[in-house]
Length: 166
Image 1 (tube, one colour):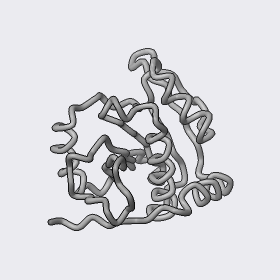
Image 2 (image 1 turned 180 degrees about the vertical axis):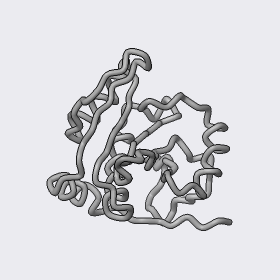
Image 3 (image 1 turned 90 degrees about the vertical axis):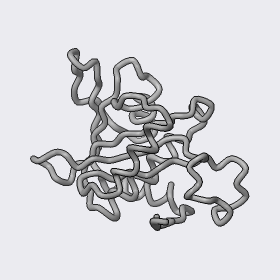
């Protein structure tokens, strides 16, 4: 989990409804893929399969192409299975290729060694700041050609499903 506060699954349901209309953020809801035989069999509107979310925010007025990433796996039985890494690959690919993001930043609680490790070891982020007041570590990574190539490789089998309001 990055710097966001933990929310209950009910709070996540309520919050995700407002995110569809915001221009400065993008949210993907993370669904459990257990017991799913194929993407076609997955009911993306079944909220009982929701296990968390991944977001990016375009909130740096000095660099409008910088995205602040957040990921949260709300269901404890789904933590530690590589899901956060997988969805971050998809979100970063989307941000670079569909929104024009050129830089990424994350702010992570300094006690969250697992998240810091994911961003440093899996994605090549580097620490740029530490805040003793917020007890957070700030990590950054530019969307270099190397990262773009890696994102393309990581997501080559992904299928995009557009949300349709029911």
